[in-house]
Image 1 (cartoon, rainbow, N blue to C red):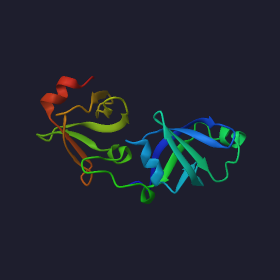
Image 2: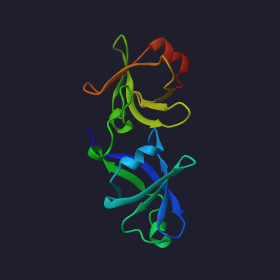
Image 3: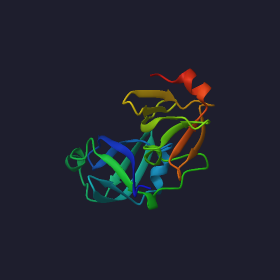
Image 4: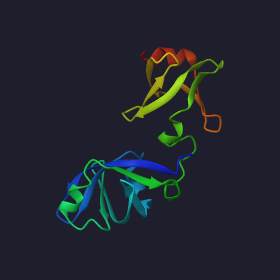
Length: 167
């Protein structure tokens, strides 16, 4: 398991008091309220304030006193320690834990390795086949049958997978 989780990216400064606007990578922007600290370029910042609105998170951080300091954080990934993050709900997973898992059919046929997940209305999974080709598929109902993080395996229904996969 990874010790850190990337939970967002700094979009821009917000106002003149050092607040930053963050695009959250979490299921809910409200989850940012649970983080006592965040890391930007491996530097730790204590979270002083959190506002949520319009699908974004506005953070006030100790050590970021004004707009100029906030401007230097533009484009930086917002990272938290796993111990500071809430445990995912049943049937939910952190993306970082899924990357690198083998994608297999229920019959045990290996389809490739999960390399990326892009968030959209339905998450899009990117799988690298052993021959180097890439497969994309939406994580729609009925495609993913089981996820086993211990075995690093994602099992899919082959028929449903073939219906939605893009090679």
